[in-house]
Length: 203
Image 1 (cartoon, rainbow, N blue to C red):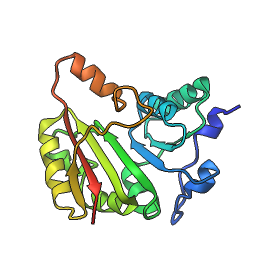
Image 2 (image 1 turned 90 degrees about the vertical axis):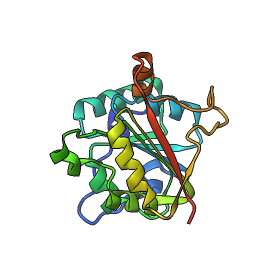
Image 3 (image 1 turned 60 degrees about the vertical axis):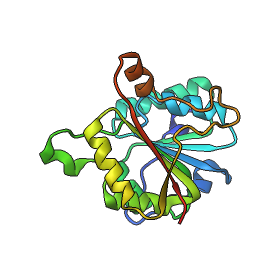
């Protein structure tokens, strides 16, 4: 039976590159979510797609352990979670062409102008993320912060290996075609606007 200790794996050390085959035990397509929160999105998606691996990164330890406990209670064994700085992990520790999808939903908008440099979506991060995508792999980004979304569009627009594609791509095994994030469900109920963009690695 899977345990919380099985789900939560240690962050890599200096110079160490993640090995997803070793992490999960065998080769399958890998999807990564940055900012898993309480794990609702990963739980639903992993249960719907048991023939894929799911790797989630979360900095808040209480949310990380809450998400891991959910995976254990539901018996979901195709998810691994890590407490790590997502920017550093993507730039320094992901192997090339290892991900099929990178999910980034409602990253911290750091709304004050003097804090914009702390935002996740910057050119160096996007370049490293594209390096980690398989050809044809996707990045899906969602936010409720319109000004941040405009910056995101500008940043990804400078990455020549990415092409904008439809955000909603129906997938077999998922009711309704895709899994909604918890923030998306909450904010739409509140009548707030949601901004979405998906991009495919094409060049």
